[in-house]
Image 1 (cartoon, rainbow, N blue to C red):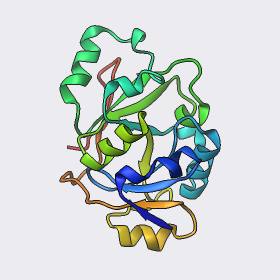
Image 2 (image 1 turned 90 degrees about the vertical axis):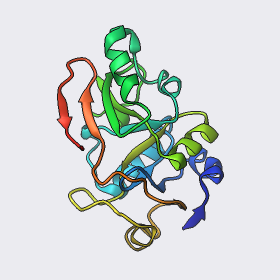
Image 3 (image 1 turned 30 degrees about the horizontal axis):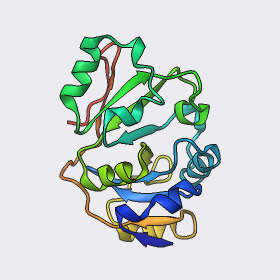
Image 4 (image 1 turned 90 degrees about the horizontal axis):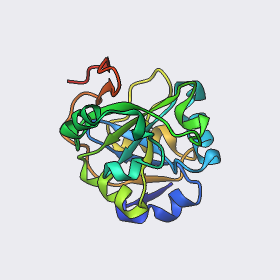
Length: 188
C-alpha cells in the first residue's frame, strides 16, 4: 500500500484507486465520485450495500454543484448549510439526475460536507472536485483511528494511505436533511 501526502493522491484517485485518509474524527475511505468502478471497489472493501449511499466531502460548495441540485433548495436552506460550513456538518441535499446510484443509493438525495480538515481540503483542492467519504471500517465495525489500524485492516485491499492527523472532533459529523431540517445523526 502506498503512503502519500494529501497533495500526492491525484494519480491514485483519478486512476480508480481507493484511499484511506484522516478526517475530522476518524479515518475515511475515499475515491473518485465520477468513477463507478472505484465506488464499487470501495463498497466491496467496506462490505457496504450500495443502497445506503455515500457521503461526498469537498473543500468548497462549488465542488458539489455537479452532484447537488441546489435549485430544489431555498435560499434559507442553503444559507443554513453555509452557516455550518466548513465544519463537521453533513447535509442531505437533492441530486442532479445523472448522479450515480452507487453514490446516492436508493435515495433522490446525497449527503455532502464542506470539510474544515486541512488534509481533506488539500486533497479536494488538488483534485478540483469532491471525494467519496465513508468511515474506514468494515460495515458494523468501529472506524479506524490510526494509520496503523488502516495498514492492519486494509493492507492489499486499498491503494494508498494518506498521511496526516485526525482533526479534533470526537464524534462523526452531524447529518441534517437540508430540506426539512431533520437531524438524522447528531454528532455533537
